[in-house]
Length: 73
Ligand SMILES: [Zn+2]
Image (cartoon, rainbow, N blue to C red; front, side, top):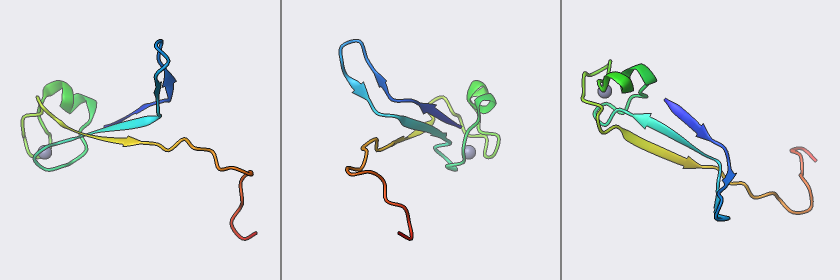
């Protein structure tokens, strides 16, 4: 299961980059869906998912200076 969190600016001014959180089974590293997470059991290997493995990916939000350059130009 991958939940995507858009970039947000918090009330105290802190900026949080757009990031995705992928929930994986700690035993077989298979992607876990919501139903499996609710049941706290991996459908694939039966492992207890009360403490699932989370993989966080942060997206770079920097904008290239001087405009975009297309491939082949
Ligand atoms: Zn598993």
